[in-house]
Image (tube, rainbow, N blue to C red):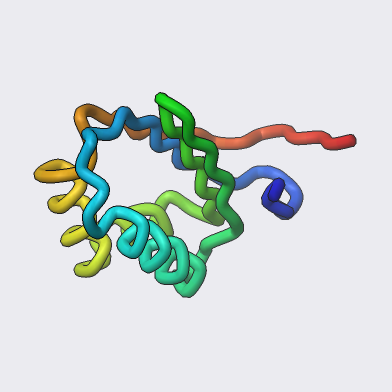
Length: 103
């Protein structure tokens, strides 16, 4: 689904990744992180797609909300597990969304 975001400005966190071949625990952790993110102050929505390259974009009200999400204890554990088991490589980008439009 396309996230229903508020009027600009807001922030986007773009997480682009290449996976390893390890599947054990990945889906359940991804589901848990999705639910946990939705409970965080400032969370606005998420969009995700995966083939060989995975891209997840989460939307946030402020940079402080993004910092708080990154520092969440369970999210820190998931990040560690990702580096150790599930991701060959990844890159995170944080962007200010100044304009959006839709059809």
